[in-house]
Length: 285
Ligand code: ATR
Image (cartoon, rainbow, N blue to C red; front, side, top):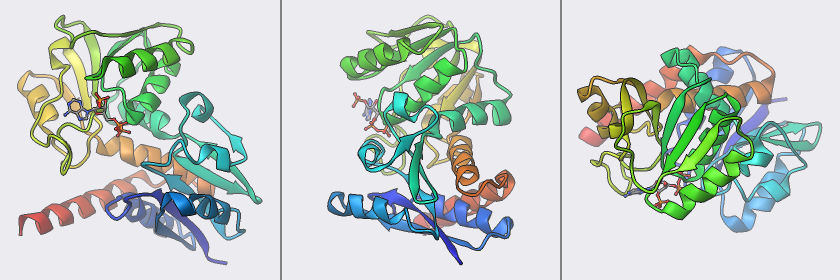
């Protein structure tokens, strides 16, 4: 029986997940196909129900459905209940289990690609949207000493800080203005500023003034791979990490939940990079 998995969202036409998940199935010799499931709100319940079929391994879930799928599945695993968002649904014998691998993928990317250990560090999160939520909970679980959240809309930062504070051993605060004191060990840019096709592709999100000279600056935007924020961080002499490692690591954790097979990270990185290069060559023509 050929197995099936896919990505549920809208739009999913440009998602990289089908590219690197299919490459991983191939590299591991698994007879499985990963599909793009463009989904309207009206068909979301039927799409999720179809994951119960025996041939279906599960699905990734992306914008705008990470919260809306929760009432449609049977159990929540990992941090997904606390985060309030599911990015991975796994079919186990007709029961659907929801997980959130965004935060754990972020922590894995920091560890594996930048040798950065979050425990005991002072962290600045720039942005308080859906992506920031998963990351904030994962930073708290990983033992950050202090998490400060700055966002254009202050109420969102305050709400996220209050939600995470209940889970954290360290301090969690929202900031009334971008930081000016260079005290942070890790600065994470989670807004859509700098994103190709986003609201402000040439902008640099606030936050770098808070970075210590030894800090790691991370942008979770992966298209382009080298963002204006990363370029600005390098000009200040900071170490940087782009968004592709987080994307691949969250996908690798989802792949392992789907298949029980160790994810071939290098294959997934190569497939994603080739696709991004192909797209930017296409865009340049
Ligand atoms: P995602 O799930 O990708 O995080 P989101 O929930 O829409 O998407 O969040 C987008 C984030 O980018 C928010 O922090 C948003 O700030 P607001 O809460 O003030 O909207 C931030 N953002 C987007 N465009 C921005 C801009 N031009 N300037 C500052 N922040 C911006």
